[in-house]
Image (cartoon, rainbow, N blue to C red; front, side):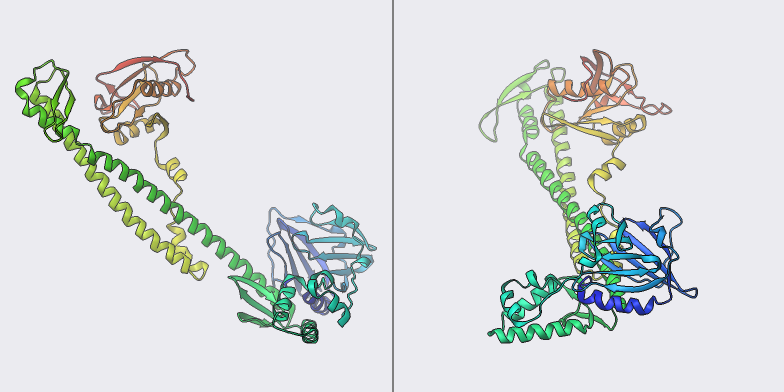
Length: 516
């Protein structure tokens, strides 16, 4: 009700007494949809701030106001230094005007998101504050007055839709009346209550109330009254302060909760993905089985054998085993035992990571509960400082590579020379496949190893295309790209950023391509 006719009328009367003998000395805007007026009587200043944002259309009257040195603009220059003559309110209308000498006036049209301030000369609009409302240049102040019949017959005729006739009431007052009418049986009782309410509105007490977690200025009795005021200016000042601070608090709270809920979803997704990977490794016992089978049939396996089929004494089914032909049976078994041991290490690491992430989830849920219970902005500050960083921000700050996926394989491409070192030396495992454009500067590229899966030829080719594209040969029709397991790549002390030694490599010719 902060723009209701029954508030604007007494506000106009109060301004009439306060602005007697004052002149407008400054009128400017330094924020979008906000207009500040300073009046002065050679002794003191009086400020009026019109905040006409779509989210909040409200007047307030700060005791002081410091104009910004930059990004502010003077408005309505024609009225500056003109003396206030009178304050004029319009019958049954959410508007009032400040009348100045020489037939100038400023009309404040307090119509929600269509609010505006209009400068008029000799009752003709000449300038408007919010230029998107061009129709306000055609406004005629004498037509703003509205006549509303307050008699029982008219009341009865409009009882089913009060807002149609009693346009000054507004949504809140209509809802208030309808709620009470539902408890009254006869027309006489409803008419009596209506007259009583109008009488109360004409001699209002201005109340700041809370309803559904929001701050309101009300002219009616309410259960959750924060404060009461005898004058509309005092009420508007407190309403504006509480509303903006509450709105800021609710916005910050919403943003915080969103950040923590997003973090919670990322952690739950992390657990789900790693649990799937853990289950695959736990259920994949083939390295251990192969090692046991090879050891049990050592006498049957000769050096040079690349493949052998043996009966799995655990399942009773035939098991095909791929061997390194340059190794004997015992050496092949040792390779399989080592890989099985590495699988167990990965199982332990995944299990530990999942447990750690579960603890983080519990902590995050506790924080979310605390934010939900936070009563004010001050109590949110500790959580603002520790707000989780969005994944995209986190990666842009901390990860030295761009990630691509192809056929289920992750391909990491170094961002620059320093990032190449970090990618190869800190982020790569020895089983990963490492690629680089041959004999030219370019990005280090990794294809991340997947347990039990060889690197398909088309995946190698795709990674090679990216390596070629992210090199000095990106414009060549064909580019040679070297690839090798990361374990054959090392860096010598004193080498410049990105420079490495490759001990063993295979070369492939590909066309440099960014997109597949």
